[in-house]
Image 1: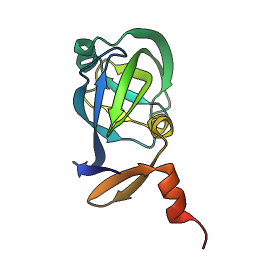
Image 2 (image 1 turned 180 degrees about the vertical axis):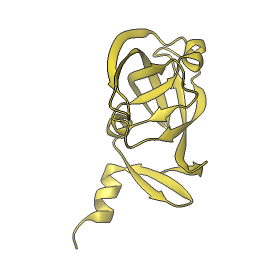
Image 3 (image 1 turned 30 degrees about the horizontal axis):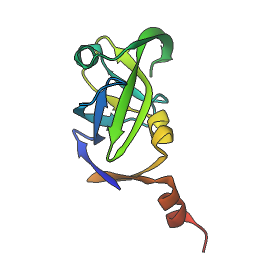
Image 4 (image 1 turned 45 degrees about the horizontal axis):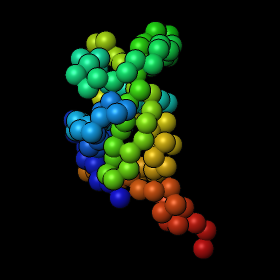
Amino acid sequence: MIRGSIKEGSPSVSIKIGGVFSDQPQEFEAIVDTGFTGFVSMPFIKAFPLGLPLYGSTSVVLADGKSQARLIAEAQVVVGSDSQIGLVILEPSSNEILVGMDFLRHFKLALILASYGLALIQESEFDKIVAEP
C-alpha cells in the first residue's frame, strides 16, 4: 500500500521520475487527477533536467474542451517498489505534476480516497475488499 495526502484540497502521492535508462530518478509530489486519462503530465521545465527522450507529440483535450498539441517523452516512473515505463505529457506552462487513470492502469492500482489522505493499493487487494460475501 502506498499512502498519499491531501495538499491544498487535491489528493497527492510521492513518485519518482527519471529517464528510461536513469539509475537515479528524482522524487516529486504528484496530484492524482481522475479526470486526466493519461499516464503522467509534468512541466517541461521539470522534465528537461531528467533527460527524458522525446517520443513525439500528441493532441490533448483540455477541461474546457479545447484541443492542443503537446510534446510527449518516455519516462521511468517509480511508485513504492514498482517501476513502469510510460509516456509523459510535457506541459509548457503548468507547474504541477499529474498522474492520471493510465497511471493507475499501468501500476494496477486502486485509489481509496478519504478527506484527510489517500491510499493506492493493488487491484487484487481491492477485489478482496469489494467482493460479494
